[in-house]
Amino acid sequence: MPIPPVVFVDTCAFESQNYQFDHEALTRFSDVCKSGGIDLVIPDVTCREVRRRIQKHAVTAIEAINATKRDTRILNHDSTWKQLRSKDYSSRLASQVIAAFDDFLSTSSATILDTNCVRVSEVFDRYFEKSPPFGAGGKEKEFPDAFAIEALLVHAKESGKHVYVVSDDKDFKTACEQHEQLRSIGSFQEAIELSWHHESLVDACHECVHDNLDQVDQIAKKHLIDVRFLLSAPCGRILTTEHLDRELENEAVVELSSQRALLVAVLRIETKFGVEYEAEGDSYYDSDDRLVIPYEAVQEDIHVVLTLPIEVELKITPASEIQFSGVNMNLAEEVEILPIDGYEFAVQEDS
Image 1 (tube, rainbow, N blue to C red):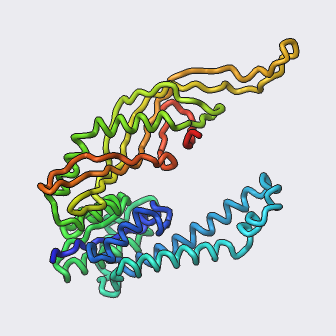
Image 2: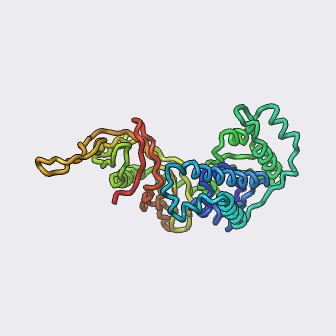
């Protein structure tokens, strides 16, 4: 039986998923761990740090709610709003999310590493030398990460296995690069891909997607035409779309069987939109013609960078050939929009 890869998940990786342990990325990852495809290890200090941050974010949430009281007094008539403002709301919210985290660890059959095995002198050597994860600008407080790294190194030495680290923390990743036993990866999806032991098949899936990138691009363009952008001015309608550049990021095969594969990725597109929207100002009533005159229509080009999460369906033939099947891009609510010309955007499906 193939040996499962050993994977550690850093606190910031859970944070990037907003601690939504029922989110697709986390449930897929947990299912693979449960099936024995991944050996999940987490130092006890990291578990405590995750719980601490959840409590901190819950307090921040209630502080933000209370900060809006003056402008939202009318919401005091709403029972849900009253519940959000209750004194014990943050503690109840934190307890709920922490329970979900503990369930995730249990469902994933995680191995909790005891940091009592760590040589404290190794951690303080890092601290005094200001080597990652320590450093300037508040990084001197990174003791949980330092203890976690040492615990992972002890586990790697004792097990004789590499540990793959899911983290987007720059200093944590830099610290991992200093040790051959620790290998940094960027996402839960990449961790799932490690569990597939048909490397040639996985590589063929990636090649098939890149060979059909023009087709993916056309599907993306068609999808974006049906998306409505909200500008800082009133709502605008897309008239033309021109893709200037594109790049596929964070690719990973997250499902693999003898008949099909599913590859997820982020499609990053620099796009020029020809947009028509109504200029700022009030409509007015023309008493002579007895008509309401709307805003003046404005047309212009707007440059944006869009990052779209995509799912690519692939078919595997009996001869183990990979064939492009289709793309799922019904994820408009997850589109990230980075305006180049200084506009503020939101995005929604066009009804």
